[in-house]
Length: 153
Length: 353
Image 1 (tube, helix red, strand yellow):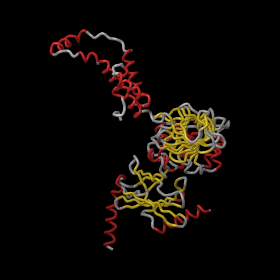
Image 2: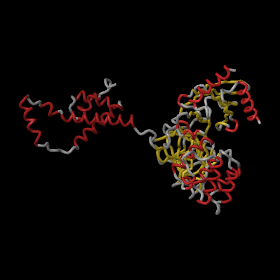
Image 3: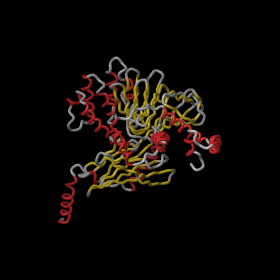
């Protein structure tokens, strides 16, 4: 009990300076939202929110794909835009197959994740899923399966 | 290179100062060497230019220093005889340097490369076979069976679809401008904003960095569809921002219409296209308001400046219910069409597009 309370206390004390009230998360947008012409060829842009120091957030990601039944994983090209905490994702995956972008972010002790299904026209906003942590492999596979099935319908 | 040529003898040759045998050798070489003939003409032009220079009397103030120099050392008659050669050489060097400088720093894109994709496109009414160039002022025209690809300076390309007539207006480093009279082009531009423009009868597509298609009809109307990036469609004081995934129609004498996303409902798209054309805007406005989703705040935002003040309240209320304006942007500011307030709200709404 004491250790449990101690852990809660430590977690709260560590998280408060990082804006825990709003939580660390992603918001996705059309490239025009970046207000930066370098985003003009981006597939989509996103901003890291709820991080006390957006410029210090660690952002990574991969493009997870299913092409002719074969799984692929491609590193993402993520570029910071002129606004702090705003990033552009450029398409590094091929046009064939079904592709989901898996975003991972760390801001101090907080994490965030997002699975972003894509299409030839950008990202599928209604199908985006957000997590308070990086997406799991099961979640990635599910998103890919749903995307591939939706493409085949 | 110069050891094989006779450039060093050209000035003396032109001045008639070479021995006869040497002069014959120079003449024989000139008959077979274009490079030296070119040099000969440059030197001749320089010497002609010198001869045409007006004689200007030296100011009196320089003579004391000249006299002092004469007293210090013996004058050199050779220098007097060869001053023309020195000046000619200086003019020649200047001409060559200027030419080299112009070549290296010439305005890029003064002519653009054009490649035939299909059929028989024409440039300036001349059929294009394979590849060619187009200059400012020239028309590129395709028939029903032809297509062409235009390299727009160093910033991108434009594909000219069948049945299209498009003119290169400006081909400069700081402005690349086309005029689309009719037909369809597909532009893919990679450059800082506002370097590439396409004029139509009812508006100008100002590239903010993107890929888009633009169709111009014979009645002067146009349809802009943005694939990547975003485009500003401008006419007089009307400006429509068209982001990736959105379309905007322009009408003659009315300019750019209300943009909408391609995945909006058919009802909303039809209403947006018809907005401003009907006698009363109520019908189309009602449809737009009722059929709009969160993403359609693109359309709603543009409506704010296009409706009459009474309807602006309705549009504001609906837009604010979907996506409240950011802190510092008040209802009063928006209803007064405060430019900064509208911009801030648009920047905030863009995250929902």
